[in-house]
Image 1 (tube, rainbow, N blue to C red):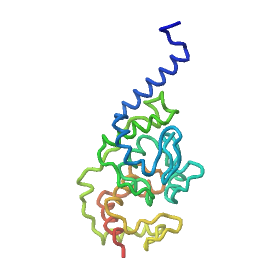
Image 2 (cartoon, helix red, strand yellow; image 1 turned 180 degrees about the horizontal axis):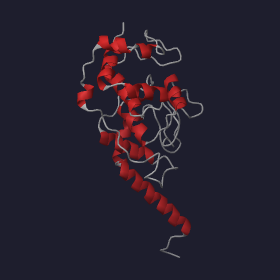
Image 3 (cartoon, rainbow, N blue to C red; image 1 turned 180 degrees about the vertical axis):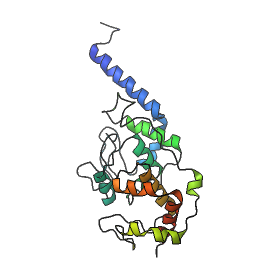
Image 4 (cartoon, helix red, strand yellow; image 1 turned 135 degrees about the vertical axis):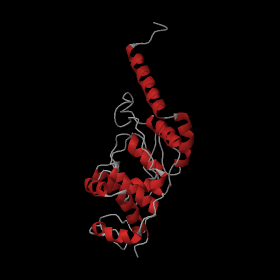
Length: 235
C-alpha cells in the first residue's frame, strides 16, 4: 500500500539508521570524507575500490592486518598480522595517529593525523564501507574507545643513552644493533618519539606481540626513554 514500508524496506531502513547512528557516535562521516582526500593518492574506498599503492579499505573494520589476498604488504605489516593485529577502532585510530608507532617499518609514509577529531571523522567515514558491524556500534570492531595520547611529560623525558646501552642487551638478543633486518624488525636509528610510542603501545597492549608486551610492561617510563636515546644513535 502507498505510504507504508514493506518488512524488507523496514529492515533496510533500520540498517541504514543504525549505520548512520554508529558512524555519528565515532565522528562526522561527511567531514571525514573531505579529510580522507589526503589518503586517496594511495588508498581507494567505496564501490569498485581497487588496491593501489596501498590496499583498498573496504571492510577494513574487523579485518586482520595484511589479510587481503594478492596485495604485496611490507614484511613489517605481515609480521603485525601474524602477531595478531586486527583493525578495529582502537588500532586504526592509533595507526592514523602515528603509523610507525603501531607497525614498525611500515611502508606508509604518511606521518599521521595528530588531531583526534580528524581521526574520529575519517574513521566514521571509513566505517560506512564496512558492512559487518553496521548494526552493532557498541561491539567490536567499532566500539568507541579513545586511545589516550601519552602525557607530554613522558614524551619530553630526556633519556640517558649510557643507561639505555646497559638496558639494551635484552633487546639486542633479537634485534640487530647495526639496523639490519634478519627476520626481526630493526629498532636501530629510530627517532626517539617513535621508539617511545612503540614501546608504550606494547605496554598498553595496543601492539599485540605477547613477548614484547611482557618486556615493555616491565620497563619504567625513564627506562623506555633511556632505550630510545640509545637506539636513536647506537653507533
